[in-house]
Length: 517
Figure 1 (cartoon, rainbow, N blue to C red):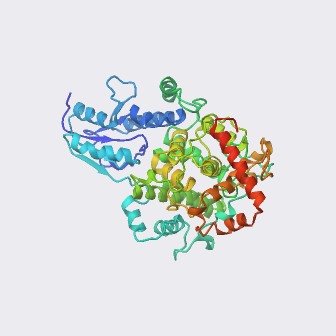
Figure 2: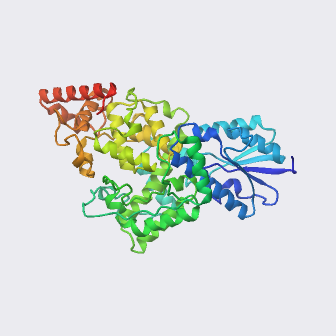
Figure 3: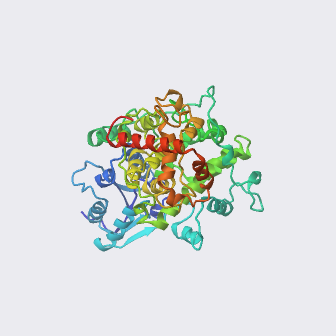
C-alpha cells in the first residue's frame, strides 16, 4: 500500500557505511532505506558459506543500526514470501510498496550490478539517481585522467601521487618519510621458528548471526568451505576493535614478515580486516591515519607502516581504478593462451604438494589466505600449468570472504595470471620451489624434495617453472625483467633442459588424467 511520496534509498551488501552517499541527505521522517538479501547475489558464483554469512549477518546488523538512528528500513530477507531473488525486481517491488517518487543508490562495486542499475532507469517509472561512492579515495573518472597518455600504468607511480595528494607519510615539501617511497625490500623476511604470532580474537555469533548461520547451512551448505566455526566481525564496532588489536599487537612486525608463510599459522602478523573494509565496516582513510599515527608515536616501524598503507592507499585504489578503466572486457583477455582446466584438488586440497594442501585447506576453513599464499602458491601453480584464466578468476571470487569482482579480478587476471599481457604487472609472478622454501616451512613436510630440480621426487614447481618459461618464450623473452632468466636457461646443458621438459610433461599428463599429484 502506498504511504505517500518517498525517496527509496538502496544500500547494497558491500555498502554498510553510515556515511554512504545514498544515505547522506536522507529525510529520516519520509524516506525508506531498502536492503535485500537476494539469491542472485548469493549465487552468481558459489560463494564460500562464511562469505555469505559475513555479508548477510553484517547487513542485518547494519539495518538495525540504521533503525536505531531513526531511519525507516525495509529489509527483505532471503526466505521472505515474495522475494524474487533479483535485486532490480526487489527495487521495483519496494517502489510499489512505498509509493516512491525516486530511487537513490550509490555507485556499485561490480560491473554486472552497474549494468543492471542502468537498465533500472528504463524499467522503473521513477527517476533513478546513482551517486558516486566517495568511500574510495579516488574515483574512476579521476583515475582515468591520471592514466590518460601513460605508456604504462605502474602502481608505484600512482601510489606516490596518492601519498602526495592525501598528505600521507610525506613531509612539508611532499617528500617521503624516511627518504624512500617504498620499503618493500625490507618486508621479505622468513618467520623464525621461535616467533609465534599472536592469535586473533574470534567474535562469538549473537542471535542475529546465529540465525544467518542456520539459513546459510540450510540453503548453501553444499558450497565449498566450512561454515563453522564462524568468528568474524559483523558490526563496525567489532571490526574496529579487531583493527585496533592489529595496530597494537601485530603491526610492529607486519612489515618484516608480511611475505612469510608457516604451516599451522594462518594469519601471522596480518591485519585480516580486508573483508570488513570491502563491505564498508571500516573506513580506509581512518585506517591509514591510525597506522600513520602509530609510526609518529613510535609504536610501529616505518617499513611496517608504509607497507600497510601501500596496500590500502596504493594497491587497493589502483586495482579499483584498473577495473573500471578496462571493464567490461578485461576478463576476456588471455595473453598466454592458457586453457588447462583448474585441477580438482583446488576444491579438495587433496594433493601431495604441502604448500598447496596447506593453503587450500586454510582457505576451506577460513575463507582467508594472505596475499603471498594467493599469489605465490595457488596463483603461481595455476600460472605455471596454464589454467584457463576465467576458471582461476572464478575460484578466487568464490572462496575468499573479501573477494568482490572489482578487487579480485585485476589481482587474479592481471597480477596472478599475467592474462592482460603486462597491463598490471611488469612481469609474470612465476617462481620455482626455492621461493616457497625461502619464505615458508611448507617444504619440510612435503612428499616432494624442493632441492631436487629433476628426476623422481623433484618439486613440481621446479620443473614447471622452467617449462612455463620455455613454453611461453615467444611472448615473454622480450620482457626486460626476464632477460637474465632466459639467459640462465640457455646456459643449461641440453640434457638438463630435456630432463625438465620430460619431467614437466609427465607431471602435467598425470595431472590432466586426474591422478593424485
